[in-house]
Image 1: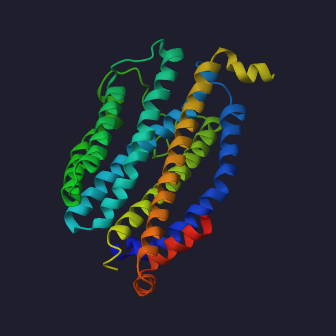
Image 2 (image 1 turned 30 degrees about the vertical axis):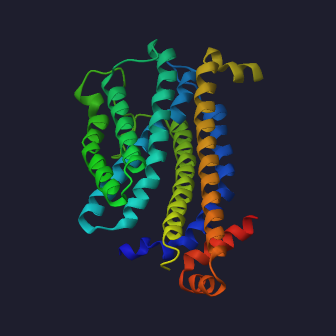
Image 3 (image 1 turned 60 degrees about the vertical axis):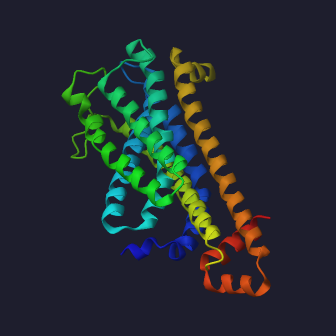
Length: 235
Length: 77
């Protein structure tokens, strides 16, 4: 099964996928922005400041999902000793860090008009800051440790330890009294958000996911070329 | 109407700043990632050209990735 992620097998498809995403990205971006900034209604309490949600919430979800993927792939890499998984986690990490930082910054910009403060040491915000620290440690392990095997091992350990923080972020609004409201969107279908706001939110999520896929594929391709370049004489 | 759209009923600064920061950061990361990828492709192609004719032929025959990188690099120049 893991042969499917063999670089030689998927390199051709990476190129095709990059071209495909590039060709549809701007169409989805324009549709999503039209819904988010023009067609969706203002909130009855927060007014137009609710539009910040369309970048803040998807960014936070992507930050969380990226780290969860990194941690799970790190566990698989530990068990099955597959080097390609490390190339994938290394490619996901900068995307996760970018979106975690964006969630924190846009959250701060949403906090000022809504709560009257740019920053609070609220449980959700603090745990997101901790997540960004785990991302930084993960990336630094790859940058600072010269031996690739050791760098992979250390970064995998960081990712697995950091996994503990994910349920803390998710349930922080239930476990502690925080400024954040409880989740409005639930997987079991009991969402409390109106469809006129859910649609732009999902469209923005789709656009940002397409962007993530694009960056991931480009970074993974770069990693494959780097490895092949190192071993060019051995091919 | 346009003024209303820009001011967002007084929340314009926060809303526009959020969107601008998000898309600007995404654009910068995209540009950097693209540049790095092209640099690696160029370096790989250069290294390949430094090999002798027979070695290069062998590498291109044996490695699908090598031939695809070279094709992608040739397309971009």
